[in-house]
Image: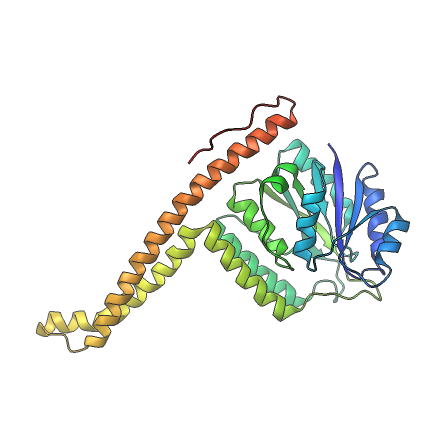
Length: 318
């Protein structure tokens, strides 16, 4: 099984050399690629000296870099790891083993602080747990670390799933689309240490956090439309019942409605609730057909990898 490390970097001259060396030490048989995202320091030079193949990725943003890596690399397993020297690279062997032996499509390395106060700040931990709880609850699968930048993906996954995010939303998109498209996802634990001296994070907590939250809701709308629109329909239904309680009480008591505006509001909310639920049902049916098509494509890729080389399907389900 061919393995490739994809290391997205932007001005990581202080750490990229050590990350590349750790990758080569952990898996000597793997190819190591550093995707330089327009760095203005010595990132490319130090990555090359450490033994990595440097690929220039012109479009700014981590999401753009990961998409470029998926389009460029052809390995059976791609291991994505940040170039900031905060992850335990030695976990890569276990990640590859899970994909090779247990047919897992994505392995996510959950972060556990090494005990230093700067490694995994409390506010970031709280935010990560909240986002992970939201994603896991809406997708129906337990998610521990939706923002981990250390994960391995199978060839079936990265060749059949399209990515839309451009920035730091990419980690949450990978998790969301893997689960919603029916891929097998497994989590393992790994230590998470603070950045070394001279290395600085590019993450803007509140600005990027808001963008990630907005992106998560847009992905859930597209990938889980019945749950998304069903939740909105439920809210409208509850507000409709609340608004209509007074008009109904008036009618039952006096056979006359005194609170006409509330009656109009209740009726409007009920209609909106029914419409949203109907939209969710229609989009969920379309998504089901899409998932069937995706499974056919993945099955064809599997058989091609085994050398059977069947003819591609001329007509997909749906």
